[in-house]
Image (tube, rainbow, N blue to C red; front, side, top):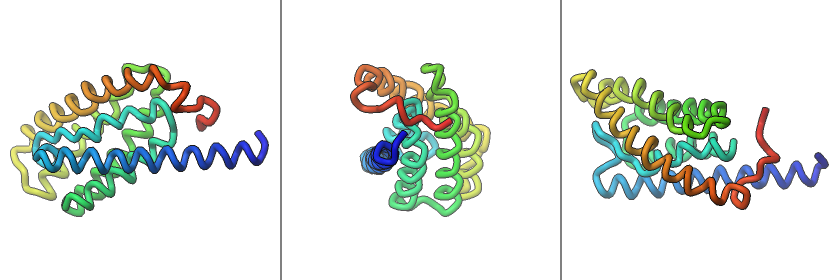
Length: 171
């Protein structure tokens, strides 16, 4: 790959990451305005975007930054800002690693958020009982990532060649 192609790919990845972050923030604001983004059952429309690492590695920083900004801008507690965003980052990395199997794309964010967010809700907001948070967070993630995310993945697969280049995957 020559220097010009490398710069072009880097610019493409940067733009994709920025677009994903902006979409994440926008969709979180919509869910927040509807009262869906920051409660025990969180149905953040933005969580549907967690399937994006299936298509592009740019989604990894894009989702992390989008989640971080969303948590700051919607007034989340510091532990939620830190650990919620880090959970999204870890889930994005695993989604990218599992990208060869399409139906597995929503599993890392569902599992990661279901395991981490209940502890964040307990420590940051005092939401009890913990066992109920595991159930409610899991339900919200299944709706957001599993159902909405898979609809998004199916729709984007049709346009994958136009939207995402297969030539820049990290090893």
